Image (tube, rainbow, N blue to C red; front, top):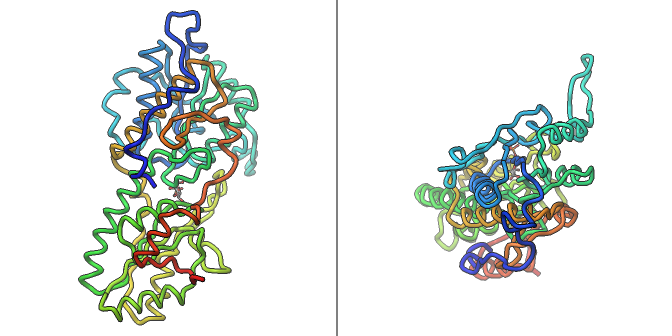
Amino acid sequence: MAPKRKAERKSSKSGSTGPTPGSSDAPVVRRVAVLTGGGDCPGLNAVIRALCKTLINKYEVDCYGVEDGFHGLIYRRSHQLDMPQLSGILTLGGTILGSSNKDNPFQHHMTINGKDQVVDVSDECIDYINMMGWGCLVTIGGDGTLTMARQFAEKGINVVAIPKTIDNDLSATDYTFGFHTAVQTAVEAIDRLHTTAMSHHRVQVVEMMGRYAGHLTLEAGIAGGGDIILIPEIPYDLDIICEAVRQRSRRGKRFSIVVVAEGAKPVGGDMVVAKIIKDSPDPLRLGGIGQLIADQICRRTGLEARATVLGHLQRGGTPTAWDRLLSTEFGFKAAELVAAGNFGRMVAQHGNKVVDVSLEEAVQKIKQVDLNDPLIDAARAVGTCFGDRLP
Ligand code: F6P
């Protein structure tokens, strides 16, 4: 739960630190490349700024930006990052480097002799890295990017990774930057939907992102006062949802807010897939559950229902102060790892400390909502329905 830990966060003084410039342990690399992969999120530029400014100012290391994630590594597109480009970007959403959540150098889709083929072009990427004299590749991304980062590390490339995603679904870190901003954005949207739902006595369904994890929906749903919250970790029963809505009507509450994760599914059923992007590391794109639930509630209860999909709004805009702080700490920590030659590591937040973990640990599994999370108990206690039948 982000707010709880917000006031506590302090950088770790333990763990690996960087070398002193000009000392015998001067940085082991002189040129570093950074890329942002996967879906963007607020805070990416703040990380790039902290990483590169630390490397340039403190260690006199040259920094290069690879354009559009692994796409730029495959197609050899990069440029040097100097101070003017790193200035004024702390508050800027998106990524100045561009991103791609499709390109995978280990399974690159290309047309050869008129035929679609999947080719491993990672060796060509490594040739490019060597040609550019990059002693380390810093990857900023979610699980797809991390998996590729680890594959490059296994092939001998010095890699340092920084975790990002609005989904907050990486098991090796308590929080990823971007999540806090996405929660805030979603809560603002839910607040607005609340007032119009009240005016029209409607059931307002709000569909959230998050892939296979319900963190975003749980936190935004509770903070936004959602009456019914549906997350992938708790399969829902439509009868229970409809009964909760009816019960509210009987109590004189003539509207209901249903906050549903794109990955939510009924008991014994499946998630709703919106499309399949075949050349993406994770080809499934979820979406459509919001409208489905709204239609079903309307049909079964006779109440008017509307669905709103928050979609990519949750990934855009300026990062919150909390995300700017986490991004700055992550970027700084990654620079220290690079300067110390501490490769094959991912920056992470554990409790109130910024630490580093092995890339192997970083890619182990996705983190879903812990059903013993006290947030769930607190929400149930104030009457929130999770679409499940309580024992
Ligand atoms: O992983 C971040 C995320 O925004 C997910 O929450 C969502 O399922 C997915 O990316 C959407 O991807 P795209 O940008 O390809 O639509």
